[in-house]
Length: 287
Image 1: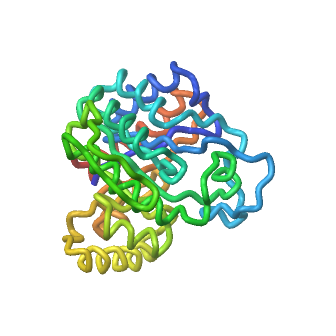
Image 2: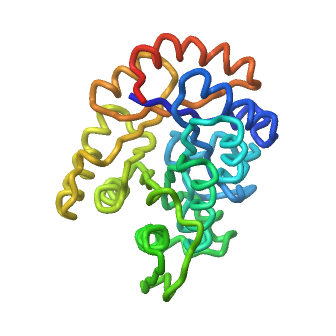
């Protein structure tokens, strides 16, 4: 099993260069394979949308500084030489896919091929409206955006014509070191089906081992219907940093566990995640 980590948005100065670079160096030293910053462009002061990953329906970090995850990852990439640079998750329907493809490719080349895109449709209607996007059709748009970005990454001269995206005979350079892996995030059957059809990975947010089995079955059925091998789709789950959770996910064949840091500074990160590294990553970890 591989292990990733989300920085501590609740308590730490995630937005500072010192924290970003120090966090990257530290978690790489502790044996983590990847970092997974989150994304919200804006947080409304008041919102009616229900946050799907907490019984309260409220996001646990409404006032936290949340830097753009790709810019944050550039600092990590420069400080840590081997960490994969994930996102948990980028809200793809809020992005311009042509511009975003260029940004991702640039970071991938500069980092030596370390970008992994965790992408989802988003849950916060008020944010989508503030960005100027249509919340209602975000599912159709993410499907098309994924295909358009891969066309730009894979084709030296790229053309694409869809419902939302259209370009003809363009060159997007630099092209990434490979077609950047896209892991579909979400807890719904629709997200599982999207991962089966289009994903290099599936990030079933909020799913414990029991719920994971059902979502994985939905994903696998969709993959087979699309002529794909579901065993090639990597499964990444999010859970607390303890051996019981890691072992439970390992037992059901999860490829990666992402744990969240809650510590206010880097010294506390090392005190908490150091023992986890020794007892769990050392025993269950793989490259």
